[in-house]
Image: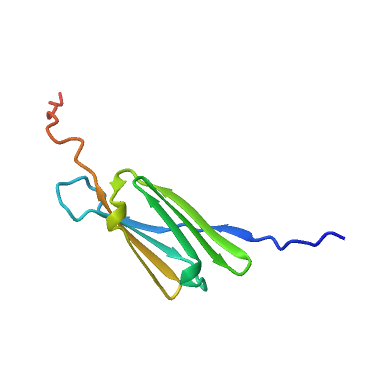
Length: 110
């Protein structure tokens, strides 16, 4: 008889999202993502960051918490900070978003 394999349940987790989303000349623009993934051991959190997206997979028993998130502006992968405390993963991703309207002409409205 074939051995039954234990299947993992995949749970899509949505981050709380906070950013200073105005394009500006400031050097402190940061996306902040916060994920609630209770009971996950830090060593079982797998986080991948590229310039325009992030992927999270966190394993707990028979559950995989998963998420992929895309960014409007490129993030600085090397300066990204992640902290996990008491079931909450917080990720700060500095981004560079030059103002696309800088130098644009103001149009007269009739």
